[in-house]
Image (cartoon, rainbow, N blue to C red):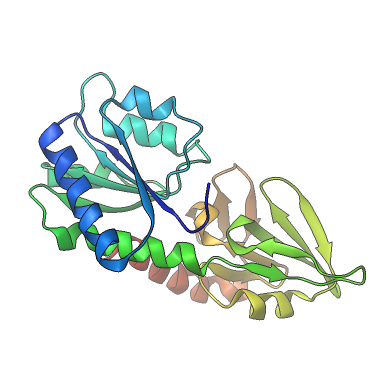
Length: 240
């Protein structure tokens, strides 16, 4: 996948609305002179069997034959190549069933270009802001991409950085790491933990649960701030 290309997936078995989403995307990217590719899927089963194409944003219909959009979402949440989902449906009541950790919003048919544009704009900005951070240690530079970080754990004057693939100890305090990460989606939830909210499935008042099944304790003195910051994050992600 080329980092300077934005990849859009459209999964809708209605050719009229499939084309309408595609045309809105083309208008947005052509106007901004952004390189893009659009992948079309007319059946949910075709999408969930596609593991080779990276998709920055998936526009997903709710009602489709054989496999509906909600079932597709459940499968897509397990697929590392699909990063964000926006539902598109003529049934606004379905919004209550569409929430998942990759869900970024809900567009009601009929829609305007602007309804599609706001999600493209938000997720495109997020993609281009994703950068490599140099967590230098005594052996030299340690470059880790921000979006690959699941959480960080303090270990005295060191920190352990956990990604989905591995872990790395770096010679930075957690406070120094927090400054480099520069705010949401990274959130300090404990004196020993910073989590990436993009990997959080849900939170209770005292525990942050990751999509992987792991969990981190929320420190007692952090709970009020964590609650407020997490709600702010959710509002931002869901455009509400």
